[in-house]
Image (tube, rainbow, N blue to C red):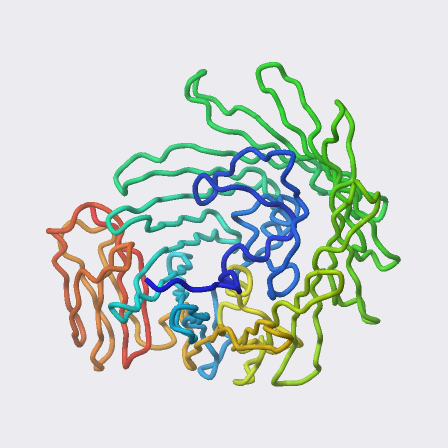
Length: 497
């Protein structure tokens, strides 16, 4: 596999997490934070500010809880006409130092499944030797009847024959996130193993006040053991003014402060400054370590973030990096984002241009709430970005370094009730041997059965009614896809007993 210089850091991964950095033991399980690791991390990517889809694997609990508490995905899209747009996939290209050219690198595909309230994302890597995409990861989002996220299951390919299964389960009380539990297993047929639990506490104003992190202790009586927590304090306007992190000895019931972040706001309740304090050289002493400053335009839109480190020798703040955004006002070039680093003067590093060439409005995009929450899909001034061009500054000149290209299909969006087109019935489900499929259509229908890794197990074309013999399959969950004239009319989970 060619070595790629991923200067864009694969924009749809964790590149936009601005607040806390953790070392992952698995996809979601984090190491206990060392006091030398800052929670205010410079955002040196050319991604939009405050992106939401990177929140779930991170430890920015306040933003995560606010996001999940407000999230409502409407799976009914009857109001979208046949001219509506459906996001199918995003393809990322990047610069290859070996080939000295831009090549394919990553692809993310989106599938919606309204009948079961399931949304699916698939991540692929490009295999240049075999000249095709290889699936790397599948994500399944399960939504409840109100449109809130119930759980997330991720299947991550670690080796050719090895898949890591990780599940996040979310529970709510009075509409507010209460528990977040992480499980893991290393084989489809293994039992889930408990890993982590985050518990969320709120005050009478429904403001998040504390989040405690626990790990499953199977050696001391099979119970949750708290090892750290974060406390939040607010001003009278509801602005977060202090975040304090503690290590916790569950056996001794002793909390030890490990960091604090102070926040300041302007008269419009916009965050202007965040300063992080970490442990000093003496017991109980805390010293300034890192600062973030935000700037806004006359319309209170965020246009800049500047990061500083405290220099203990010079006893002042030293610039480290900054990111600027330009709102162009154009209907084609929607905005540009540039990053710079301090080398005695501000030096350009990366640039991204956000484009809208297909003129897709937010009102015409199916599954808008979901794709803008969990994919790197961006709406700017009412238009959906359909291409992001990336550049790197080399010898004071911007050189192309790849792009993110969005592919949309027009017509009946995935997730629209099939009653608006061909009516399809699939039964019984769960199924023991034969799965029956009926369709009130004279058109040919393409039927494909996948396992959860995306492998095709069965494929046929039929008209009217048919059945599939599943006797040879092991018990488990499979995905059935039906297409009519190339358009998906059904994508349903099938349970084999």
